[in-house]
Length: 199
Image (cartoon, rainbow, N blue to C red; front, side, top):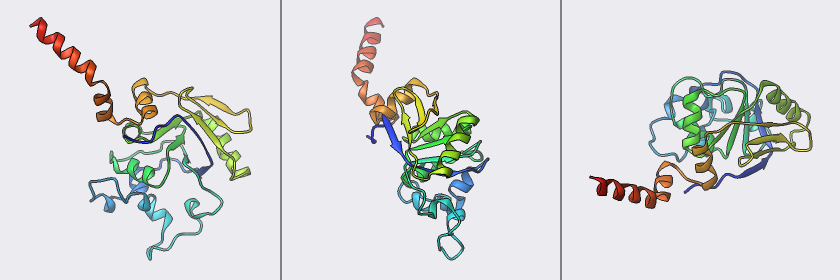
């Protein structure tokens, strides 16, 4: 079971770069592990740290101005190879949602399968969010999964986003795919029993 995702109100970390691929999210040299633990510290590793391992002062995640559980990124986030580790790294770094105007399909699916909510917004809304954070790094973003809306708190900027009903149900219940199957075990057994009687 994961943490249930219903409504998230949080500050956000802005990364206004387009075409961020999975190798930039989590470099290939860190993919040897087969469990999710430890990936968060290497999220955007080559952007966050220099060759000696010291934090780069000009990277947004190293700035004291920005924090929160929402990552806001430029268009076409998560492109490139299909590594699931990218979603692990983002979640491991403390983010519960990523906002962009476009996600690569495989990344979106990997994110949803790992309890990370990708919120697709219009380019206009994305620009408004970046502008709001630039104006006030402490501004909060509200994501309401039940209503499927995202808004900039304290403003009129609000937009609806799409998500498949199954993945929405899983996120709100804190289920992965196996948890979901366990939750409907009774229905599955009833179906199987009915089929056996028909044979």
